Image (cartoon, rainbow, N blue to C red; front, side, top):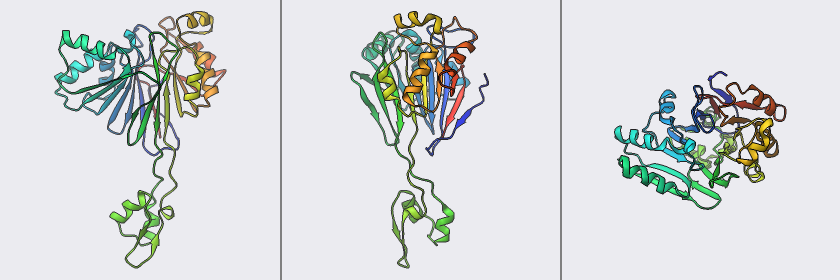
Length: 315
């Protein structure tokens, strides 16, 4: 599979780049690291999970360690969280000053406290948020992040990033045709305000700016059995990132260990009416997982299997 960025046009304005840093399940292989996914929004970085080797992949992806960053941990299994100690130490060595926000299940604070007592704590502010109930866990100016309970043990969370509606496209040629002076008046029109010119004419924002656009929606399953709750929360997502640990021959095993098959992930994509599905958390027993892709595409055609450093852009 090529790591050339793929672009999906949606209703948003700003570009959201998603980089799969680790796509394997349980343990690393020569081709796949363990779970970590980076979402790059302008200068900000969002991490879904932080398995061993995450910081190495971040360097390979050109992400660096000084960006404003939020980390959302799905659960406290080693393949999803053991990259945090090294990441925090590297950030400290590089004299990071910006606060780092880390969200995750109960026990996250004890985990970070334990390795900090042995290795030394981070040299910059770390804001820890343990999630104890479903709902919005972060509400920002541009987007929110919600958590829904995943069907996995230990207690685990799936995450849904939802951007707020964005201003419509501003048409400078229309403003110029109406003799609207550049500067403050253009900015006010872009923000949806109507303005009055010096000659008394009233210019409505809708004459120059397109209607607001829906923001992007991205859902990350973490580790989970097929979940109706997740399907409901993921409804209409531009992208669903879903684990696909097993193939159909191991459906029973998937259920016992609270994981999903590729086909089950595709069924969730259909139920949720998403635009695209990307499979991750691939078991090391499948060095060439093309049959997983075929099984999923037979149910949901807009399916891809991620590899490490695979990128996709949503806009």
